[in-house]
Image (cartoon, rainbow, N blue to C red; front, side, top):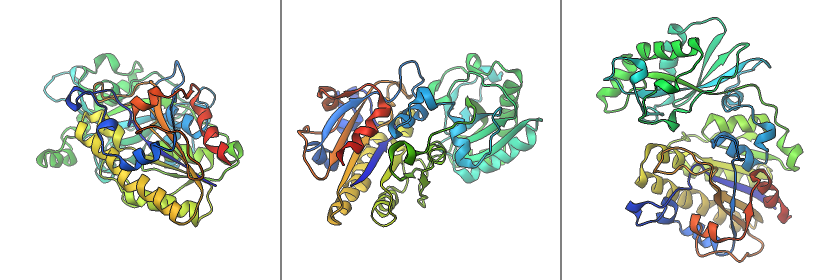
Length: 401
């Protein structure tokens, strides 16, 4: 028996008037998910423990089987693992987004975050901007590292964990009340705007109709994590397929193998087909017991408030990953169990994460369950199956041996 998780980041949503009261998942054409739903277990799971912030960090830790209340030490330290930063026990890491701030206000604190991803800036462009930040924000004990797209890293040697606000939580809001209380962190953010706003990379982006990445934004502070090895925890060898440093960092911390897919970028136009092919190969040729396929696109489209593109991302997951993976494994005679779910909702109406439970689909190629007419939030809520502790759900996936 082989095992998969198809993690559709931020896919769950709320009913929208413009979709005649449907969610994007309900509105999307998902023939493969709906075919599986009829013979699968459909339920709801709470991936974010009560009292914890609803982030992809806590939620994905839950889905992979790690209780966030025990293992979570912050988001950016997980990303640091992916980048290869060797943190000392008393180092503190911060996510450093390059964001788009409004420009018409005179004072930095009066500006607004227009886009937490700067139009999903390319890693190549962002790397040039990070070099400018490294030079212009030189401080003893502070080091910048390039990540992926808009997601980068700041390490504060012998630092302190401080409370900071994720930029996607305050889109279009005045930033003043959300700036760091730490005077040096705030000074660095203000200075970053002076360095980046008229940088040649951003001037070129403006000419091309793209938003400038004109400020750094620090958040997600934390210390070095210590995850128990996935194989020791679950007795399975595991591989991760993701384009984002957070998930790759979780895999590094858990001793899972990161499988790199060319063209996978964390955006809407990622290499869905490549991810499907990598998953099948990992399970049928490379000897892995378990593969975690992560697609960021629904979450990004939720943050950006793009209803049609969120629907499109869901449809592409269904068409280009779920359909081909299930078909190829079945044709090869491979028994498998697959869990399909989002990590958390990213509702279009709020453009950020919520902590509400999410629907899951659990398919077993060797036996049929009672199932439902389709896989979506509505049918998940109708189910009597509830899992209040999300980190236990993966054990349910492995029960079918």
